[in-house]
Length: 387
Ligand SMILES: Cc1cc2nc3c(=O)[nH]c(=O)nc-3n(C[C@H](O)[C@H](O)[C@H](O)COP(=O)(O)OP(=O)(O)OC[C@H]3O[C@@H](n4cnc5c(N)ncnc54)[C@H](O)[C@@H]3O)c2cc1C
Image 1 (cartoon, protein in one colour):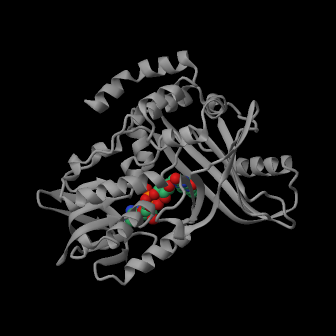
Image 2 (cartoon, rainbow, N blue to C red; image 1 turned 30 degrees about the horizontal axis):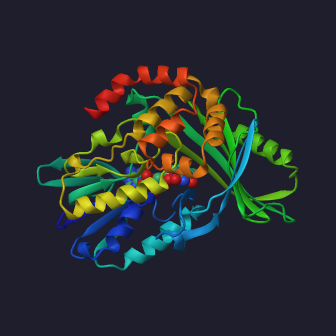
Image 3 (tube, rainbow, N blue to C red; image 1 turned 120 degrees about the vertical axis):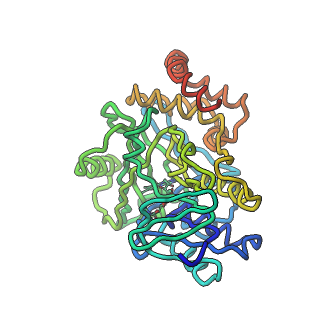
């Protein structure tokens, strides 16, 4: 442990690399030494990250496809919307991770190693990061390694899993309208859960079709395949090649992850609770929270004093609580939200950027008795979180 790094970033996934990239691009960090520890450097998980944002952003170099038109579909409501100032964008993790690692690898500030982080030992003036094969010393640690099962078992908050299987398929002939992405299609058997499909056409004959569930438990593996086949045959699609598969599980919880931040260790990404509890979207939260984090790093603010709290946490908690106790209601609730509010207002609400008046309007789309009961059930947790 000869070197004391300024920062050790644990995990070179989305949050670790967005942070590393922002540090790399900011000359205020030119004299900092940063170590990145990733257990899977040679074979990172292949994920597809989608998100909406106002037209241009610093991530556009990594976007492989974007759409200006979105479809929401359910048994009682169908709506196609031109997004005007927004676009819905897709990034493939493999390309993103490879490009950013390549960019920072040759910088004199960064060292990147493959190892398994096992734990931390923090004292007043340093943190020791223990890995499978070594120990590393840091001034501060940014940690994106998370044990979801452990948090689930310890948490007193409603906990759902967003789990999905996506197939990227290729068709022999043009089939898809690649100007349009389907953000939610609820026209499938809900099986007493919240179930929908994404259809994300990359070209006219290639698309990612994703079967997504919000529920307490995963399905048996073969059931994801069965539902995907059924959906495709309902689209009259029988001849296709599956060129890629993507299985994922995202925690949906208002668990206060940031309570475990300390003066020198900050949890980032999903580990920091930066996954939107009621939707699973994470990309933009990581981007925004990292901007805030960069300011705190520059001002040497103790990590235990940084807060990422937003009043939208309350809306997430209530929606999640309703879905936890009435898991079958997702289709109805999202239909109400999408049929009574414009896509622009919904995006701004889901981005935690809406005004209080806009939030009241969106909240009024939902069944009042059920939501009031949920609010009362969670009043204690809400007060505790804010006091
Ligand atoms: C398949 C999938 C698709 C998703 N799609 C979307 C989407 O479309 N839009 C969206 O907004 N969000 C999406 N998400 C949610 C979220 O954006 C991603 O999970 C995102 O990768 C979270 O970033 P992160 O940095 O928190 O975690 P990760 O990107 O998973 O990074 C954590 C890193 O830590 C490494 N690691 C783990 N354990 C150790 C250890 N002990 N030691 C060292 N390294 C370790 C991992 O290998 C990984 O590289 C998706 C999630 C999944 C699983």
